[in-house]
Length: 142
Image (cartoon, rainbow, N blue to C red; front, top):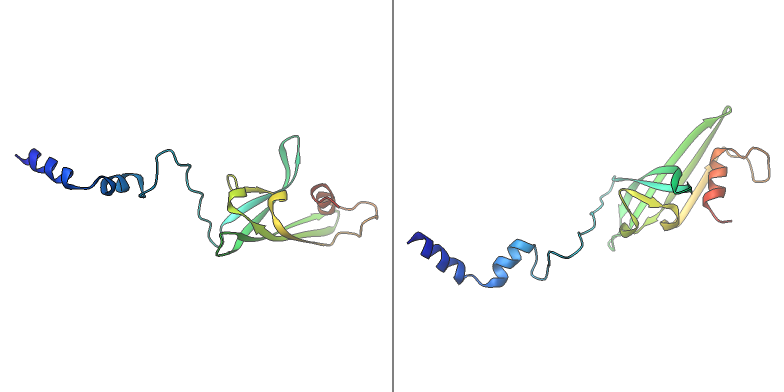
């Protein structure tokens, strides 16, 4: 008797009501690609500055500073290095579209409105440009 009552109650439900609860939305399908991760302020990412033979040669850790209403992420980060008694610093700020992020990593070419500031690096044309300026020369097409 209880089985018949349960079947009658289930039959009384409209198909979209139970389908919506199983699939997560009225127009969702189990074959839809997974939704991208929603990034928040202070989430960490990695920007690959240069690659050699498909392996990352250098990367900068950046932090999400702001999430724009359209979903674009504003990121900023700093990399410091002390070599040969000289401290070099590289600051990177820019914007990243979440679809360009793969496993928490984004390529330098996919960062928009890039602002790179080098400190403690000798001017171009001088010998021994240092690690960071060499990194920029490999990553940035001048």
